[in-house]
Length: 226
Ligand SMILES: Nc1ncnc2c1ncn2[C@@H]1O[C@H](COP(=O)(O)OP(=O)(O)OP(=O)(O)O)[C@@H](O)[C@H]1O
Ligand SMILES: Nc1nc2c(ncn2[C@@H]2O[C@H](COP(=O)(O)OP(=O)(O)O)[C@@H](O)[C@H]2O)c(=O)[nH]1
Image 1 (tube, rainbow, N blue to C red):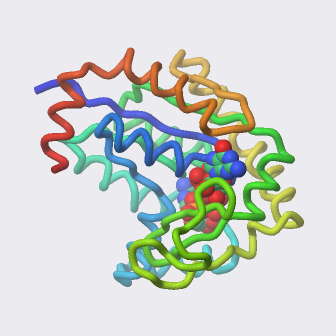
Image 2 (cartoon, rainbow, N blue to C red):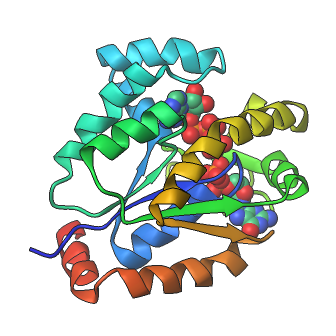
């Protein structure tokens, strides 16, 4: 069997991790694993870990490392036949070390987006809470304003996407991300992308992935995904 490809995408809130991950998943057949979506699934299913995690998320806090790794690591260990792109994990150095101990990453994509751009994007971000689908009233608006394209249910805006909350979130992100970025840079797998537009970053990520992912893998992956 072809070698699996395992990658992580890092970036501050609003940097386009979710948007780019979806493009990677559809163009290269990698499975997009989002820690936020995974937590929401566990909360909806009322798993023991989901119930514990819910209390932290509702307070606007990160889920503690031991709980988070207990949730996500077994999920990754199950992925023995699929290549993946992980979004939202690791968020701390302890999580990065836990990930290191179970697999050798092939690539880390880090998004470096100016603060003003992030503020502007998040002001216009609307989400469908049940599915995690993300819209932007200017960049990718829903077909009908305020309504999810697939379910027809109403869209909501997150409290923490307000500009006042964002500055603190970004400072926190920078502090947490620095040692993680340093770790991956030292391993020689870090690729940093800086721009204000996802559409300008995407061609670079796409050609990088094309050069690293063998086509037989993407074909095989697509076949198993359909
Ligand atoms: N790796 C993680 N470690 C700890 N907590 C996490 C992790 N991933 C997600 N969470 C928790 O789940 C919540 C939702 O995560 P999610 O990534 O969907 O949204 P977010 O924090 O608003 O990020 P972004 O704005 O970058 O999309 C987070 O606010 C945090 O409480
Ligand atoms: N204007 C604009 N909005 C974008 C661009 N890329 C992503 N977005 C939107 O910005 C918001 C944040 O993107 P998202 O993928 O959720 O980022 P994440 O928080 O890093 O996962 C969403 O509303 C996206 O639709 C872009 O290049 N331009």
